[in-house]
Image (cartoon, rainbow, N blue to C red):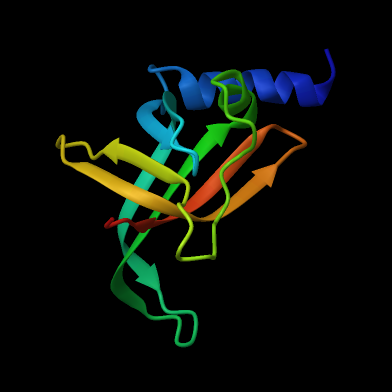
Length: 127
């Protein structure tokens, strides 16, 4: 097994093993195919203003998912931002640690195809 294949195997443990950082995440594509997956999620209430470097209140949410899990679940592509506001976006839903449910739209999908992960930057979604 090469290093990339080994790294992807370790990635499976890190992102999808409940003993590590795995968290239930539902992914819905623009065609409304919706599947439960596991991955890493975050939803942070402080961000850094890029102009001043100051810490400010804001919201920064993202998920990290294995590309092989997305394709294995039946998705024909990986999540990406859909800039056309009249088109349906990729959606991601997960609960916070207190059980509060949130739905986000994918604003950016940043794949690393060498290791097999996609990190999605999210925006709160209101239909």
